[in-house]
Amino acid sequence: MRSSIATMRSLLFPSLPFHHHRHQLLSPLFSNPKKPLFEFSIKSRPSRLTVRSHSSMPIKGSDRSAEARCLSGEIHVIVGPMFAGKTTALLRRIQCEVDKGRKVAMIKSDKDTRYLIDSVVTHDGVRMQCLALSELSTFQTKIGVEAYDKLDVIGVDEAQFFEDLYDFCCNAADRDGKTVIVAGLDGDYLRRRFGSVLDIVPLADSVTKLTARCELCGRPAHFTLRKTEQMETELIGGAEVYMPVCRQHYVNGQVVIEAARLVLESKKELLEVYSETVAP
Ligand SMILES: Nc1ncnc2c1ncn2[C@@H]1O[C@H](COP(=O)(O)OP(=O)(O)O)[C@@H](O)[C@H]1O
Ligand SMILES: Cc1cn([C@H]2C[C@H](O)[C@@H](COP(=O)(O)O)O2)c(=O)[nH]c1=O
Ligand SMILES: [Zn+2]
Image 1 (spheres, rainbow, N blue to C red):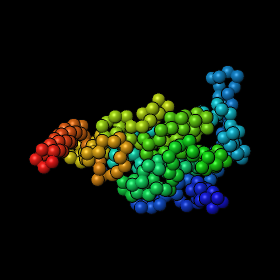
Image 2: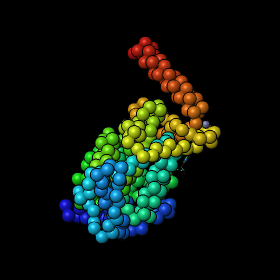
Image 3: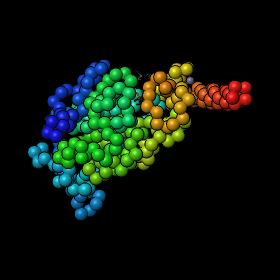
Image 4: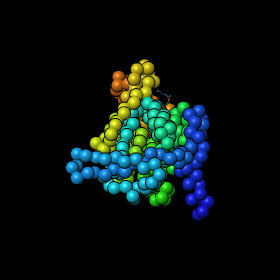
C-alpha cells in the first residue's frame, strides 16, 4: 500500500524536467515552484473585485471562497480527427502551464492501450506519464484530496472514452478552480458525436478544432475513415484501422466501404445457399 502511494506521489510531483524530445518520457507533474497565490474578495458592490496577491500564505482549495475558485477555473477543449495533433497540442499546453510554475496532472482513458498504459503517447512517440482511469470520478480518490487540492491544471486525453467527462470538468473548474485541458475526438468514424466531448463545449473557455492531412490527397482532413469492416463505435487502433481524410475522400471512402460490405454480405448469402442446396 505504502509503495503504491509513493508511486502515485512520484507520478504527481516528480522533480524530473519536462523535455519535448522524441521518445522522451515526460514527467506528468511538475516540481512545486512558488506560484503567485491570489485571494479574491467581492466587495459589497458586485461590480468591484479586489485581487490581493499573497506570496506566502498557501491557499488550498478548501480555503478559497467559492467565488474565487470558480473565477480561477478554466476549461479548454481540443478536438479533431485522428492524427490531427490533439495529443501534441495538449502536451504543448501542459508545457506552457509548467513554464508558468503551475502543478499539473495528466489523465487518459485506460481503454487506450495502443502504446503504453501509464503514458500519454502522441503518434510521433512523444510520451508523458499519466494516470490511466476508467472513470474521471476516481481521480481525486486515487491521488488523494491533499494532492488534488494542490493541483492547478488537469490534462485529459482520449476524452471521448469518459462517460463522466461533463461532471468532472464542471466540478474541477467551477467548484475547485482548476484549469482543465481536454483532448478528444469530436466525432466517431461515422462522423457522429463521440462520447461526451461535445457536451463540454458550452462549459469551455476555448474550443480548438484541429485538422490532419488527407491520406489520399493531402488536403486538410476533418474526418476519420475506418478502413476495416467492424461497425462498433469503440475500436481501439491506429493507422492500421483508421486514416484521416478530407470531405471528398470521406464520402468516396464510405461509398467504397459500404459497397465492399454489400459484396461481402451477398457472398456470404451465396455461400450459405450453396452449402444448403448443392452440398447440404
Ligand atoms: N495524415 C496525417 N496528418 C497529420 N499528421 C499525421 C498524419 N499521419 C501521421 N501523422 C503524425 O501524427 C502526429 C499527430 O499525432 P497526435 O498528436 O497523437 O494526434 P492525435 O492525438 O490528434 O491523434 C503528427 O505530428 C504527424 O507526425
Ligand atoms: C474514429 C474512431 C476512433 N476510435 C479510437 C481509435 C483510437 O484508439 C482513439 C483515437 O485516438 P487518437 O489518435 O488519439 O485520436 O479512438 C474509436 O474507438 N472509434 C472511432 O470511431
Ligand atoms: Zn482527400
